[in-house]
Amino acid sequence: MPASVLEIIPPAVLAGLALGGVFTVVATAIFAVGERVFPTQARVAEAGSTYSSEGRRRGEIRQYLQDIGERYAEEYPLEGTDDSVAFYLPERDVAVTFDAHQFFRLQNVTGTHVILAEHEMPGVHLGERLPFEVPELEGEPPVTDRRRRLEWAHDALGVSPTADLEEVRSAYRERVKQAHPDHGGSKAAFREVQDAYATVREHAE
Image (cartoon, rainbow, N blue to C red):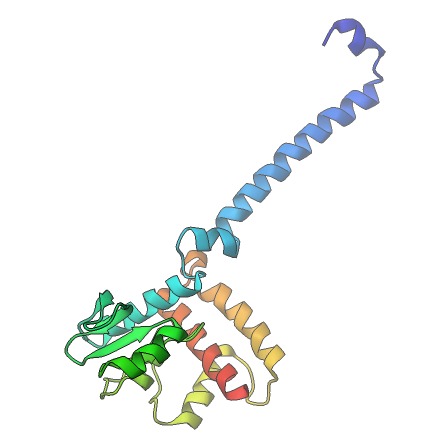
């Protein structure tokens, strides 16, 4: 900018422009840091993290099957059909799918035991649906005792048994942030909070 133009601009205006530039840079830096520390769900989903519904379910079911020592195959083509299921347990002839249409279709065309993993079903809930005995995992309440499981779920979320669904949702949002591995938590704690929330919500509904 020519010196003559600078001379006719009041010093207060120049100071304002300079301050505006500084604030713009600072705000951009804050947003960039915030996005890294507290990523949006859309960004995390694009990266394939646990916020992606199917990606999260796949990871949890994979981990659960490993924890109970059950062999499995992913994206397995079922014999005698044109379908590939998300998980297949070859020693048990059990298939797991995320697709409701596929679930009902396979019920009628194969002798395979098919399980539907619904939206937001934590992986550990798969144990309640498997057609065989599964070992109890450390830290998990017995799946056969619903009252104790519900008590455990309320305790895990830090809410009273009389809490309404909105209180439960609010507690879940807080707990899941604290338990997320990206925010200093652990995968086990993250799964526990999700499992507790699903248990309380299923009971409420």
